[in-house]
Every structure is written in structure tokens, then in C-alpha cells.
Image (cartoon, rainbow, N blue to C red):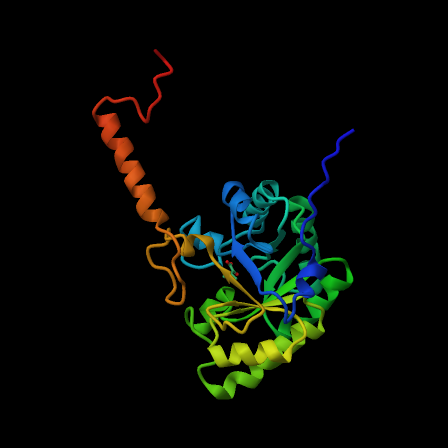
Length: 269
Ligand code: KIV
């Protein structure tokens, strides 16, 4: 008989219960090995549709497919055992109707075994969020700068620069909270607006380029590791992985050219 206790993943209610409490730590991850490292420190890991740009060189997240999200979602769930895994619903898989959204969200949850999905939009998505949560799909909402709408917004633009737009953003946040979202990502939003919204709604806000007053923070892993040569302005870069990879690849290439054994492997003698 095994004496090992199974590690329990952080749950959706535990994240929701962190409103106003200890800051929620989160990062994106798209593959098993990085997810395994992040797992020890993050409360939730987002398999974000930013993977289209970060992993697949797309210009925006609009081209990301459901199959791609499911493939990366499976890898992250396999690589982790502790953090809640949230998978993004990509553009075109949930906007049409609540039932289309449910069908696609259920596919994501069944095939990846993730704990929740995330979708973009405020008031206009409230009915869908209610439909999903009533049917067993926990939803994290995402407002402010919503990259899937970048074609309508005319690019990746910080939201709330004009104070007259604040009530609309506040209404979006209240609508998704009332509809049953368990947390709300606030992306690319002026600081005082993100702080106001955080005070106004009963669910945790997760900031990215928003406010330190948010209940938690998220960054794209590759941005903070120094793998993205042009990270967004607000990102603090904690590592130099791009430089380290380049140095390692150069050393390897030099050794191969000198007919040296790559690394120290002499095992074939
Ligand atoms: O797709 C993503 O990585 C995201 C984060 C930026 C929040 O949605």
C-alpha cells in the first residue's frame, strides 16, 4: 500500500477566496518542462493564447486554434501537480453563443483536464459566463486590453487613458463578477482605474500592466525570462535566457566545428 499522499491542486474556490488576501502569483506556461518549474511557485498557471505569438510566431492571438490550445494545455497539465491550470479559449470559439462556448469549453476541460477556462470580454460575455458556470465550467474573465479584439481596437492599446471611459470598464468588471466569473484579468489598463475596479468587485483581479493594487499579478513567462527581444514596456525582465541560449548554442557550434565531442560525452569510445 502506498503511503504517499496525493498532492492536491489549488482549486478555483481557493483562488476566489484570495480576494483582498495574500497576492495571487501566476505566470503563463505552454509546455511541460517550464510548467514543472513554475508549478512550485504559482497559484495558477495560464496556458494563454499568447502562445500563438510567443511559440508560433503569429502577429496576434487571432489565428490560434482550439486544437493548438488543447495540445499545449495537455502538456502543461502533464507537467504540473500543484497549481490550478487555466486554459484560454481562443478567438472564435465562444463569442457566437453560450452553447457554442459550452461545447468548446467542455472539450478543453475534458481533453486537457485543466481546472478552468479564460475568455475575453466584459458585459457582452456575461450571459455566456453565467451559462458556463451554471454547467460546471469555472470561468476566469479578461477585460481592459483584450488582444483578441486588437483588430477592432487598432492595436495593443492601454485602456482607460480617457477618464470618461472608466464607467464602461467598471461596468464590464461588475458584469463578469455578477455572472459568476471566479477572477478577472485586467490587462493594459491605467493604474488608478485598475485599482478602483479591484476595490469595487468581490472577485480577485489579476493585473498585467495594470496596478500593484490588483489581488494578483501575471506575466508571460518568456517575457520575464528575457526570451522575448521586445517585451511590453511594463514587463520587469528577471532573467537573460535569450542571451544564455545564444551563448550555449555558440559554444556547441564552436565545439562541433573543432571536431570536439559536444559537451563532455566520451561514451562511444
Ligand atoms: O494569453 C495570455 O498570455 C494572456 C495573459 C497576457 C493574461 O491572456
